[in-house]
Figure (spheres, rainbow, N blue to C red):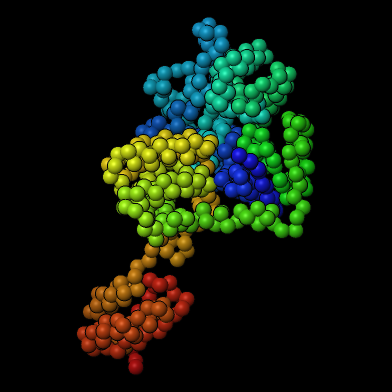
Amino acid sequence: MHKKLIINVAEHETRVALLEDGTIVEIFIERGDDSNIAGNIYKGRVQRILPGMQAAFVDIGLNQAAFIYVDDVICNDYKEFEQIFIKNSEVDHKISGTGSANHSSPPIERDSRHIEELITEGQEIMVQVAKSPIGTKGPRVTNYISLPSRFLVLMPTSDHIGISRCIESETERERLKNIVLSLRKEPYGYIVRTVSEGIYEEKLEKEMGFLNNLWESIQRRYKSAPATSLIHQELTVSLRAVRDLLTNEAEKLIIDSRSGFESILSFLDTFMQSLKDSVELYEGSEPIFDAYNLEGEILRALRRKVWLKSGGYLVIEQTEALVSIDVNTGRYVGKHNLEETILKTNLEAVKEIAYQIRLRDLGGIIIIDFIDVEKKSNQEKIFNALKKALTKDRSKSHILPMSEMGLIQMTRKRTRQALTRMLCEPCFYCDGEGSLISRQTICYNIYREILRDASNMVGVKLTLRVNSKIADLLLGKENHIITSLEQTLGKRIVIYPNPQFHMEEFDIFEDLKE
């Protein structure tokens, strides 16, 4: 499978598309705002402790307060924060000599920890953004810092040495672990990334030194910086793509910005000189995303309804915490029997569902309503096909077998906003409801509103201002409503259309004179 990274750089927006055999499968967008701040490290101030939720709000200088859970809190002051590293190291080396603490949890029983005992309101703490703001939720932060680089991830709050699961050879895993243990001079934890397979000790040593120096620099900035300020910013989306995707996920990178191209080459000079030949500057007259036919697929990923080649279709509905995907046969009628038609539609839908989940970056709980199949063997085929289709997805997911009602429930890790949340906003007309009150219902609402105020009316005539389409309905098909009101009230009703009115908006005025 041939993979490419296509990068489009504009003045205030950078888009990175990962292509597999010419088809866009993932897209990353970075704008000059706070929509994607995962990995950034801040000096924050605790705003409010929530003992009932064992969590706290932390001000990190953004519009929304960050949220930290008790399991993500290390300790209650910075000196203890430093001392924990030494304590972890001493305990773990006595046990195994290799380190066994998990970077995401302290060496204390979690059940015995209470957030009000660990931090206090007004306290200054170092936090790293684990999840960017999503919808109305602020960013989720943690005390457990991790600093990724090309071959290693430094975890200064742990002593654990981890090896990527994608490195399958036990001999190679042991070799890499021994190298890291022999090079380690501080009681820090490290994760050895997939691209480290077969790498020489000198490269790991150089990168370990770079990460250690970076962490020392962050510590110095933390001590001198004012509260609620950024002290370390994660790489730009272009450089993250180089670090995390080039060679590991893609063989070639094409970018349409000369300054971005030079920035990437400079980055590669420092970390990965051998990859410089994989980077190409796009100088065509046609916009780069148009040249690779990407804009159409991005727009398709924003639609609620997605058509399948057979004539069936998917309906994708997204809420704050749950995504529902409905499979329908649509125009597809099959050739033989109903069960075969349904199975074929479902199996075609599986591929498109896996593709849309990955491209749209859907997360949380996902419920897929397949068309009902009677045979157990066919249910298993659909379930296995979905599991296989999702193996290309780098985000972790967990899938449950199909229920008797034809539903498959799955969860997928979510660390940033889905594509639709990033590129779309609620409809200004329906305020994100997805539907409006029908025009006929609005006419009857007007009827009831006038009757409700009838006893207080003293005017000889009523003026009704409504949207133009509602005016057409009241003067036409629903004219009986106006006739009935005039008879009941003994007053004439004059209707004025106003095309500027919202469909559901109307005003009623009394006129004392004809």
